[in-house]
Amino acid sequence: MIYALVLAAMVLAATVAAGYPTVALLRRQNVGKEISEWAPETHQAKAGTPTMGGLLIVLVIVAFTLAANFFGRYSIGLPLLVFGCLALLGFVDDLGSLEGRRQAALQRRVKLLAFIAIGIGAAIGLYEFLELQTVNVPYEGRYDLGWVYVPIAIGVVALTAGGVAVTDGLDGLAAGTLAIAFFAYGILALHQDQTYLGAFSFTAGAACAGFLWHNAHPASVFMGDTGALALGGALAVVAFMTGQWLVLPLIGVVFVIEGASVGLQVAYFQLSGGKRIFRKTPIHHHFEEGGWSEVQTTIRFWIVGLLGALVGLALALEVY
Image (tube, rainbow, N blue to C red; front, top):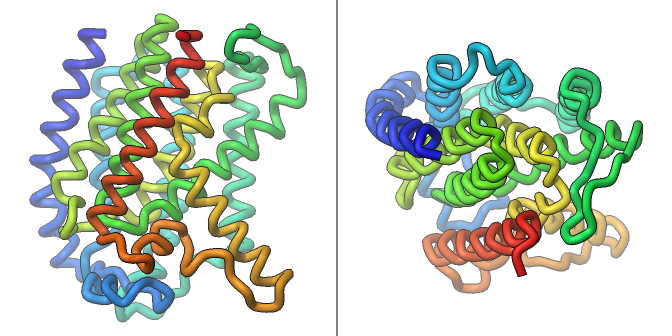
Protein backbone atom coordinates (compact mmCIF):
# COMPACT_ATOMS: atom_id res chain seq x y z
CA MET A 1 0.00 0.00 0.00
CA ILE A 2 2.77 2.45 0.95
CA TYR A 3 4.60 1.68 -2.31
CA ALA A 4 1.48 2.40 -4.37
CA LEU A 5 0.70 5.61 -2.48
CA VAL A 6 4.24 6.97 -2.79
CA LEU A 7 4.30 6.12 -6.49
CA ALA A 8 0.92 7.82 -6.97
CA ALA A 9 2.15 10.97 -5.23
CA MET A 10 5.20 11.10 -7.49
CA VAL A 11 3.08 10.56 -10.60
CA LEU A 12 0.58 13.25 -9.61
CA ALA A 13 3.34 15.81 -9.02
CA ALA A 14 5.12 14.86 -12.25
CA THR A 15 1.92 15.18 -14.30
CA VAL A 16 1.16 18.63 -12.92
CA ALA A 17 4.72 19.82 -13.52
CA ALA A 18 5.08 18.28 -16.98
CA GLY A 19 1.73 19.71 -18.02
CA TYR A 20 3.08 23.24 -18.41
CA PRO A 21 5.69 22.50 -21.10
CA THR A 22 3.34 19.98 -22.72
CA VAL A 23 0.53 22.53 -23.12
CA ALA A 24 3.02 25.09 -24.42
CA LEU A 25 4.36 22.59 -26.96
CA LEU A 26 0.87 21.66 -28.15
CA ARG A 27 0.03 25.34 -28.59
CA ARG A 28 3.16 25.87 -30.68
CA GLN A 29 2.19 22.91 -32.85
CA ASN A 30 -1.28 24.42 -33.44
CA VAL A 31 -3.11 21.27 -32.44
CA GLY A 32 -6.31 23.12 -31.60
CA LYS A 33 -9.51 21.09 -31.49
CA GLU A 34 -12.37 21.79 -33.87
CA ILE A 35 -15.63 21.90 -31.89
CA SER A 36 -18.54 19.88 -33.28
CA GLU A 37 -21.51 21.81 -34.61
CA TRP A 38 -23.69 19.52 -32.47
CA ALA A 39 -22.13 20.75 -29.23
CA PRO A 40 -23.93 23.44 -27.18
CA GLU A 41 -23.32 27.02 -28.30
CA THR A 42 -21.32 27.75 -25.15
CA HIS A 43 -18.70 25.23 -26.33
CA GLN A 44 -17.87 27.08 -29.54
CA ALA A 45 -15.58 29.41 -27.57
CA LYS A 46 -13.37 26.38 -26.87
CA ALA A 47 -12.39 26.09 -30.53
CA GLY A 48 -8.62 26.10 -30.87
CA THR A 49 -7.91 24.78 -27.36
CA PRO A 50 -5.06 22.25 -27.69
CA THR A 51 -6.14 18.62 -27.77
CA MET A 52 -4.06 15.43 -27.55
CA GLY A 53 -3.33 16.28 -23.91
CA GLY A 54 -3.70 12.56 -23.34
CA LEU A 55 -0.11 12.31 -24.59
CA LEU A 56 0.95 13.77 -21.24
CA ILE A 57 -0.96 11.08 -19.34
CA VAL A 58 0.30 8.31 -21.62
CA LEU A 59 3.95 9.31 -21.35
CA VAL A 60 3.85 9.74 -17.58
CA ILE A 61 2.13 6.39 -17.01
CA VAL A 62 4.47 4.53 -19.37
CA ALA A 63 7.59 6.18 -17.91
CA PHE A 64 6.72 5.47 -14.29
CA THR A 65 5.45 1.97 -15.00
CA LEU A 66 8.61 1.00 -16.86
CA ALA A 67 10.87 2.64 -14.29
CA ALA A 68 9.21 1.47 -11.08
CA ASN A 69 6.62 -1.18 -11.73
CA PHE A 70 7.38 -3.33 -14.78
CA PHE A 71 10.62 -5.25 -14.88
CA GLY A 72 10.15 -8.67 -13.31
CA ARG A 73 6.37 -8.18 -13.12
CA TYR A 74 5.41 -8.93 -16.68
CA SER A 75 1.69 -9.32 -15.99
CA ILE A 76 1.63 -5.50 -16.03
CA GLY A 77 2.66 -5.78 -19.66
CA LEU A 78 -0.89 -6.62 -20.78
CA PRO A 79 -2.67 -3.49 -19.51
CA LEU A 80 0.34 -1.47 -20.66
CA LEU A 81 0.22 -2.99 -24.16
CA VAL A 82 -3.53 -2.42 -24.52
CA PHE A 83 -2.98 1.10 -23.18
CA GLY A 84 -0.33 1.80 -25.82
CA CYS A 85 -2.29 0.34 -28.75
CA LEU A 86 -5.40 2.35 -27.93
CA ALA A 87 -3.32 5.49 -27.36
CA LEU A 88 -1.95 5.10 -30.89
CA LEU A 89 -5.46 4.58 -32.28
CA GLY A 90 -6.69 7.65 -30.41
CA PHE A 91 -3.74 9.73 -31.60
CA VAL A 92 -4.53 8.96 -35.24
CA ASP A 93 -8.20 9.79 -34.67
CA ASP A 94 -7.32 13.03 -32.87
CA LEU A 95 -5.40 14.21 -35.92
CA GLY A 96 -8.70 14.39 -37.75
CA SER A 97 -10.31 16.66 -35.16
CA LEU A 98 -7.74 19.43 -35.41
CA GLU A 99 -9.01 22.87 -36.32
CA GLY A 100 -8.14 23.91 -39.86
CA ARG A 101 -6.67 20.55 -40.84
CA ARG A 102 -7.94 18.54 -43.78
CA GLN A 103 -7.13 15.01 -42.71
CA ALA A 104 -10.21 12.98 -41.90
CA ALA A 105 -10.84 11.32 -38.57
CA LEU A 106 -11.03 7.56 -38.58
CA GLN A 107 -14.28 6.28 -40.00
CA ARG A 108 -16.57 4.66 -37.45
CA ARG A 109 -16.27 1.29 -39.15
CA VAL A 110 -12.46 1.42 -39.09
CA LYS A 111 -12.50 2.54 -35.47
CA LEU A 112 -14.88 -0.28 -34.53
CA LEU A 113 -12.71 -2.87 -36.26
CA ALA A 114 -9.65 -1.52 -34.45
CA PHE A 115 -11.51 -1.70 -31.12
CA ILE A 116 -12.45 -5.31 -31.81
CA ALA A 117 -8.92 -6.25 -32.89
CA ILE A 118 -7.39 -4.75 -29.75
CA GLY A 119 -10.16 -6.33 -27.67
CA ILE A 120 -9.35 -9.73 -29.19
CA GLY A 121 -5.69 -9.27 -28.34
CA ALA A 122 -6.55 -8.29 -24.77
CA ALA A 123 -8.94 -11.23 -24.37
CA ILE A 124 -6.37 -13.72 -25.64
CA GLY A 125 -3.79 -12.25 -23.30
CA LEU A 126 -6.13 -12.58 -20.33
CA TYR A 127 -7.35 -16.07 -21.23
CA GLU A 128 -4.21 -17.74 -22.59
CA PHE A 129 -1.23 -15.99 -21.02
CA LEU A 130 -2.62 -14.91 -17.65
CA GLU A 131 -4.95 -17.95 -17.55
CA LEU A 132 -7.91 -15.89 -16.38
CA GLN A 133 -11.42 -17.14 -17.16
CA THR A 134 -13.42 -16.48 -14.01
CA VAL A 135 -15.81 -13.89 -12.65
CA ASN A 136 -16.34 -12.98 -9.02
CA VAL A 137 -20.04 -12.64 -8.23
CA PRO A 138 -20.64 -10.61 -5.04
CA TYR A 139 -21.84 -12.78 -2.15
CA GLU A 140 -21.88 -15.85 -4.40
CA GLY A 141 -18.25 -16.61 -5.15
CA ARG A 142 -16.10 -17.29 -8.18
CA TYR A 143 -17.40 -18.94 -11.35
CA ASP A 144 -15.39 -20.39 -14.22
CA LEU A 145 -16.76 -19.17 -17.56
CA GLY A 146 -14.54 -21.18 -19.87
CA TRP A 147 -14.37 -19.97 -23.47
CA VAL A 148 -17.35 -17.61 -22.94
CA TYR A 149 -14.88 -15.38 -21.07
CA VAL A 150 -13.20 -14.41 -24.36
CA PRO A 151 -16.12 -12.73 -26.21
CA ILE A 152 -17.17 -11.03 -22.97
CA ALA A 153 -13.67 -9.59 -22.55
CA ILE A 154 -13.59 -8.40 -26.16
CA GLY A 155 -16.89 -6.57 -25.76
CA VAL A 156 -16.10 -5.04 -22.38
CA VAL A 157 -12.70 -3.69 -23.48
CA ALA A 158 -14.18 -2.11 -26.62
CA LEU A 159 -17.26 -0.70 -24.89
CA THR A 160 -15.32 0.72 -21.96
CA ALA A 161 -12.86 2.48 -24.26
CA GLY A 162 -15.75 3.90 -26.28
CA GLY A 163 -17.66 4.94 -23.16
CA VAL A 164 -14.72 6.90 -21.81
CA ALA A 165 -14.19 8.56 -25.19
CA VAL A 166 -17.74 9.95 -25.33
CA THR A 167 -17.45 11.08 -21.69
CA ASP A 168 -14.53 13.32 -22.64
CA GLY A 169 -16.73 16.24 -23.65
CA LEU A 170 -16.61 18.59 -20.67
CA ASP A 171 -13.63 20.14 -18.91
CA GLY A 172 -12.39 17.68 -16.31
CA LEU A 173 -15.23 15.19 -16.69
CA ALA A 174 -13.36 12.19 -18.08
CA ALA A 175 -10.20 12.81 -16.06
CA GLY A 176 -12.09 13.07 -12.76
CA THR A 177 -14.26 10.00 -13.29
CA LEU A 178 -11.28 7.98 -14.53
CA ALA A 179 -9.27 8.91 -11.44
CA ILE A 180 -12.11 7.67 -9.22
CA ALA A 181 -12.43 4.40 -11.17
CA PHE A 182 -8.70 3.64 -11.22
CA PHE A 183 -8.29 4.37 -7.52
CA ALA A 184 -11.23 2.04 -6.80
CA TYR A 185 -9.68 -0.80 -8.77
CA GLY A 186 -6.32 -0.02 -7.19
CA ILE A 187 -7.89 -0.63 -3.78
CA LEU A 188 -9.37 -3.93 -5.01
CA ALA A 189 -6.03 -5.06 -6.45
CA LEU A 190 -4.17 -4.24 -3.24
CA HIS A 191 -6.87 -6.03 -1.22
CA GLN A 192 -6.07 -9.12 -3.33
CA ASP A 193 -2.32 -8.64 -2.71
CA GLN A 194 -1.78 -7.80 -6.39
CA THR A 195 0.72 -5.13 -5.40
CA TYR A 196 1.95 -4.22 -8.84
CA LEU A 197 -1.47 -4.18 -10.47
CA GLY A 198 -2.58 -1.94 -7.61
CA ALA A 199 0.42 0.30 -8.19
CA PHE A 200 -0.39 0.51 -11.92
CA SER A 201 -3.98 1.47 -11.10
CA PHE A 202 -2.85 4.13 -8.64
CA THR A 203 -0.37 5.40 -11.24
CA ALA A 204 -3.15 5.79 -13.82
CA GLY A 205 -5.50 7.39 -11.28
CA ALA A 206 -2.84 9.84 -10.13
CA ALA A 207 -1.96 10.79 -13.71
CA CYS A 208 -5.64 11.55 -14.39
CA ALA A 209 -5.86 13.60 -11.18
CA GLY A 210 -2.72 15.52 -12.10
CA PHE A 211 -4.09 16.18 -15.57
CA LEU A 212 -7.06 17.91 -13.95
CA TRP A 213 -4.70 20.73 -12.95
CA HIS A 214 -4.62 21.73 -16.63
CA ASN A 215 -7.96 20.29 -17.75
CA ALA A 216 -10.22 21.86 -15.09
CA HIS A 217 -12.63 24.51 -16.36
CA PRO A 218 -11.65 26.57 -18.27
CA ALA A 219 -9.39 23.89 -19.71
CA SER A 220 -5.95 24.74 -21.04
CA VAL A 221 -5.85 21.42 -22.87
CA PHE A 222 -8.21 18.58 -23.78
CA MET A 223 -7.49 14.90 -23.19
CA GLY A 224 -8.62 13.77 -26.62
CA ASP A 225 -9.01 10.19 -27.79
CA THR A 226 -5.28 9.72 -27.30
CA GLY A 227 -5.87 9.53 -23.58
CA ALA A 228 -9.54 8.56 -23.36
CA LEU A 229 -9.35 5.38 -25.45
CA ALA A 230 -6.09 4.27 -23.83
CA LEU A 231 -7.34 4.80 -20.29
CA GLY A 232 -10.71 3.19 -20.96
CA GLY A 233 -9.13 0.06 -22.40
CA ALA A 234 -6.59 -0.17 -19.59
CA LEU A 235 -9.35 0.21 -17.00
CA ALA A 236 -11.23 -2.73 -18.51
CA VAL A 237 -8.12 -4.93 -18.50
CA VAL A 238 -7.41 -4.03 -14.87
CA ALA A 239 -11.00 -4.96 -14.01
CA PHE A 240 -10.56 -8.39 -15.61
CA MET A 241 -7.21 -8.94 -13.89
CA THR A 242 -8.84 -8.41 -10.50
CA GLY A 243 -11.68 -10.77 -11.43
CA GLN A 244 -14.08 -8.01 -10.39
CA TRP A 245 -15.21 -6.95 -13.85
CA LEU A 246 -18.85 -7.60 -12.96
CA VAL A 247 -18.85 -4.39 -10.88
CA LEU A 248 -17.22 -2.34 -13.65
CA PRO A 249 -20.63 -0.92 -14.71
CA LEU A 250 -20.90 0.50 -11.17
CA ILE A 251 -17.32 1.68 -10.73
CA GLY A 252 -17.47 3.16 -14.22
CA VAL A 253 -21.14 4.08 -14.06
CA VAL A 254 -20.65 7.47 -15.74
CA PHE A 255 -19.06 5.82 -18.78
CA VAL A 256 -21.98 3.40 -19.00
CA ILE A 257 -24.55 6.21 -18.81
CA GLU A 258 -22.71 8.35 -21.35
CA GLY A 259 -22.23 5.53 -23.85
CA ALA A 260 -25.77 4.22 -23.42
CA SER A 261 -27.24 7.70 -23.98
CA VAL A 262 -25.57 7.90 -27.38
CA GLY A 263 -26.68 4.41 -28.38
CA LEU A 264 -30.27 5.00 -27.26
CA GLN A 265 -30.45 8.37 -29.01
CA VAL A 266 -29.20 6.98 -32.31
CA ALA A 267 -31.47 3.92 -32.18
CA TYR A 268 -34.57 5.90 -31.21
CA PHE A 269 -33.85 8.57 -33.83
CA GLN A 270 -33.72 5.94 -36.58
CA LEU A 271 -36.72 3.94 -35.37
CA SER A 272 -38.96 6.95 -34.71
CA GLY A 273 -38.21 8.81 -37.91
CA GLY A 274 -36.21 11.65 -36.40
CA LYS A 275 -37.44 11.97 -32.83
CA ARG A 276 -35.08 12.26 -29.87
CA ILE A 277 -35.06 11.05 -26.26
CA PHE A 278 -32.50 13.59 -25.07
CA ARG A 279 -31.96 17.21 -26.05
CA LYS A 280 -28.40 16.35 -27.09
CA THR A 281 -26.00 13.50 -26.51
CA PRO A 282 -23.77 12.44 -24.90
CA ILE A 283 -26.05 12.99 -21.93
CA HIS A 284 -23.86 15.63 -20.28
CA HIS A 285 -24.94 17.96 -23.11
CA HIS A 286 -28.58 17.15 -22.32
CA PHE A 287 -28.13 18.56 -18.82
CA GLU A 288 -26.25 21.60 -20.13
CA GLU A 289 -29.12 22.33 -22.50
CA GLY A 290 -31.45 21.99 -19.51
CA GLY A 291 -29.73 24.78 -17.61
CA TRP A 292 -26.83 23.20 -15.73
CA SER A 293 -23.53 25.00 -16.11
CA GLU A 294 -20.53 23.04 -17.36
CA VAL A 295 -18.94 23.06 -13.91
CA GLN A 296 -22.18 21.92 -12.24
CA THR A 297 -22.56 19.09 -14.74
CA THR A 298 -18.97 17.93 -14.30
CA ILE A 299 -19.02 17.96 -10.49
CA ARG A 300 -22.41 16.26 -10.30
CA PHE A 301 -21.21 13.54 -12.66
CA TRP A 302 -18.11 13.12 -10.46
CA ILE A 303 -20.45 12.61 -7.50
CA VAL A 304 -22.41 9.98 -9.43
CA GLY A 305 -19.13 8.31 -10.35
CA LEU A 306 -17.95 8.34 -6.74
CA LEU A 307 -21.25 6.88 -5.56
CA GLY A 308 -21.03 4.10 -8.13
CA ALA A 309 -17.43 3.37 -7.17
CA LEU A 310 -18.30 3.13 -3.48
CA VAL A 311 -21.19 0.76 -4.15
CA GLY A 312 -19.04 -1.28 -6.52
CA LEU A 313 -16.25 -1.51 -3.95
CA ALA A 314 -18.68 -2.57 -1.24
CA LEU A 315 -20.07 -5.34 -3.43
CA ALA A 316 -16.64 -6.49 -4.57
CA LEU A 317 -15.31 -6.57 -1.03
CA GLU A 318 -18.55 -8.16 0.17
CA VAL A 319 -19.16 -5.44 2.75
CA TYR A 320 -22.74 -5.03 3.96
